[in-house]
Length: 130
Figure 1 (cartoon, rainbow, N blue to C red):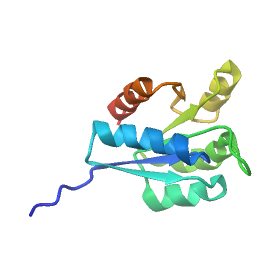
Figure 2 (tube, rainbow, N blue to C red; figure 1 turned 135 degrees about the vertical axis):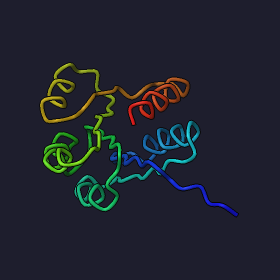
Figure 3 (cartoon, rainbow, N blue to C red; figure 1 turned 180 degrees about the vertical axis):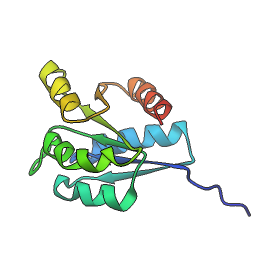
């Protein structure tokens, strides 16, 4: 039996387990040789990033304790030293949130879709960036 190695990894930082499981399942349905990790506690998200060293990190903005902007601020200096990409994935359509995310070092800003078909398209788009 030959085991297929995982070549890429994604870390989803989102306090909402339902939201993160949707994007995780969509990513895995698009590509099976990718490892997807979820972190629901924003206060330990940086430690999880250091443990996994993901190729792509998706961060929600609205989270208790540390919001996504604070997580991004903490990750930005670490991410600069790696080939990892960070994308803010939020329900907010506010232009200010997008601008602030990019100013803090995010590579992109995506709005969470409202329907499953759009989540699948988003997953394909995210995988294309890896």
